[in-house]
Length: 86
Image (cartoon, rainbow, N blue to C red; front, side, top):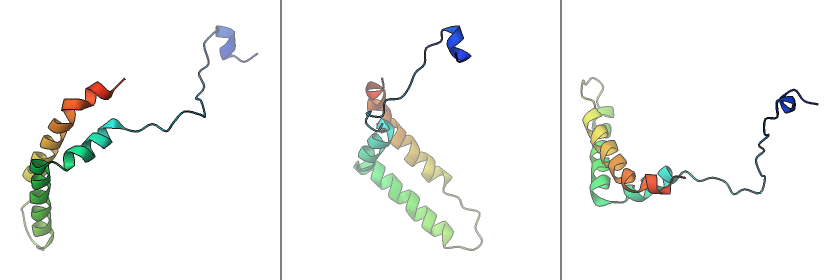
């Protein structure tokens, strides 16, 4: 008899027939990404990133643009994410 079975602990095994799990947050992020205001924030971030990468010596960073984009994306996702969690 196995050591753990002597304690009477239940054994849980994954079913091989279960469908592959899909992360609802990733799906919602893709959906929110297509919204106009979020897409424009992403484009501003990319423009800043291209500008910074095009210079050899600069102190400019794109943190503000990145934070604006991620905050708006997360705000959009948060409206419907928790209703999809079990």
